[in-house]
Length: 99
Image 1 (tube, helix red, strand yellow):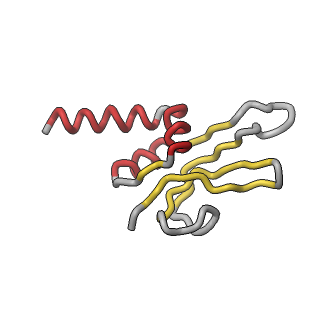
Image 2 (cartoon, rainbow, N blue to C red):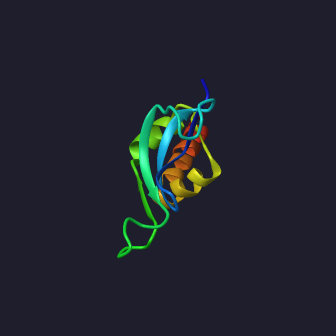
């Protein structure tokens, strides 16, 4: 089973929020998923706070990445923002140097 880390759309019409999920690559965008890894709200949580919100559980994401899950392009950008992608790359380089 190929696992992808991708976005799952939630929210009302014209007011999207997304869940960052680990899902089987064959399941539909808003279908079955294995685990919720975080939340992305591109329009903010409210009209008072319109800045984008990125809340990602880095420990869960790193566990999935180490097991071979592949992030989509958009999720990779969000992981760079949260710091999980840099941590994963640093751990990968450490393993290659030690081998």
